[in-house]
Image 1 (cartoon, rainbow, N blue to C red):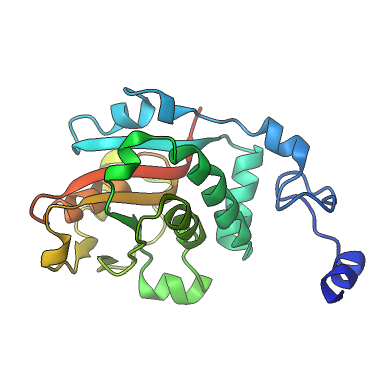
Image 2: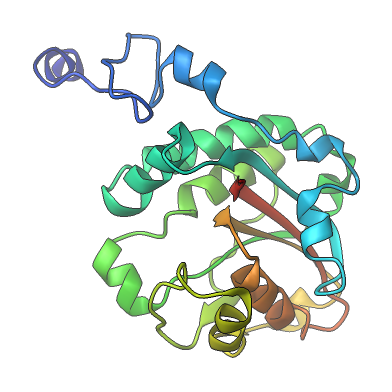
Length: 227
């Protein structure tokens, strides 16, 4: 009853186009959902993400659900998620991609889902890790443990979006480390993040995880930057 009253006086709007959502719509409207560009990378063995990391890290599997275009619906969704407190977007994308990835045979070999961590200072500023809802939704659907304690960020760095590939790599290379125990040996880790651009952050996280004996790495992101 209370929720119906709140929706009446404070109707929820679409995260993509800001139109008022219908009663059966969540987070984004039906039209935006149909217009969102999907990558379908889970169907392509040698996809763009696998190519991006070739020669950098040995990936078992890599994919993103959405393409991220400047001034597009996905950019607006990610902006609301990261800077406006709309954590429900993370959960929505996780449920969406989880249903798709459940059909990927390799997902059955994954032992842990690992989020790219925020530094404690950034986590305090934002109040949440924007990939937590994504990861926990994947965890529930794929029946894989979500572990946000294994990988951690040693240093607090400013945003790297305006640096070139080499500049980002130099800054990020020593930022991450792991707090691994013997239970993490010989395990397959699914590393998750929101948007993949140059891949420097995911590369650094993967190299930290690969310090664990017998580790295997796969990467899944909500979106991938696309020109």
